[in-house]
Length: 353
Image 1 (tube, rainbow, N blue to C red):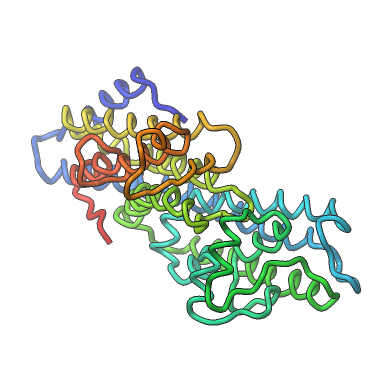
Image 2: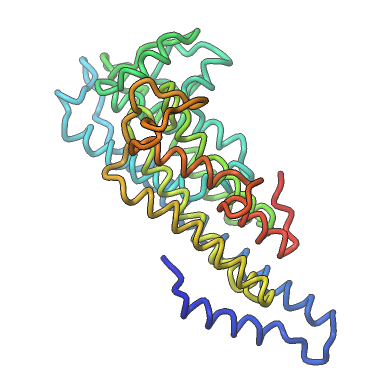
């Protein structure tokens, strides 16, 4: 949801009125800051809870859609309807998770790993010779790797097959593998999602945790594009990484909006910072929305992140990479990451881990 200039002006007036201490007391002003903070954190907590609820529901739907085990397992050809249903549920789960990814990484780091770590991160630690059980490689990308086993892009195959402990992706080929996929791998993902959903309800969220998640998700946007060059991008099998990035930015803007009245209460400086932050979100989201589909644009031939040519930078991927690299730079004035950090400083929030 975009905040219009007219609405921003109204918020600024309301914020200024709320922040006027009745007796000129610093204590009353501090109490007003505390109220703004409380309201913002409560709003963010509801947003995270809603998405964790949706994530748990989608992972349960995914498990339920898995075909009943039979002698020859299942595939996209023999069980097309079920595979399509699982893919649709996977995408719903992915969107819900990516909206709160930054917060989950701070609040539930162990679950963030078991749920969202990439294949190469898992097998760097230990080999995983059973694709379908609930040990070793787990989470959304383990499921994704199986669901899209027949559509994995060549750069991804080239990257993964060169790794130690690599096992080729495959559909379940036996009754035992199909049973393990449904009742072990998918069940583990659904159980982890349910635990996060349940545990978060009684968790005390604070402003640094809420805000840090947003800033971290902005900083990580550049990683999501840069890893495409080596086949290491995030939702690499489904070619869904751009959809991930859209969800990150939309959630970041939604979280910022919870803190926006507090920012605007800081007078002229708050209004200036607010305008800069919203402009940054608009630059990123507009660039993402201008690209069709859910995948990142194709890499230009011979792409080198360290020394791209002007011709390469003029391609859709080059333009996207340049923008994301710039907006993720928290040391350069005028970028979204820089202005988000300014807003945190203005509120006295420690946005660093």
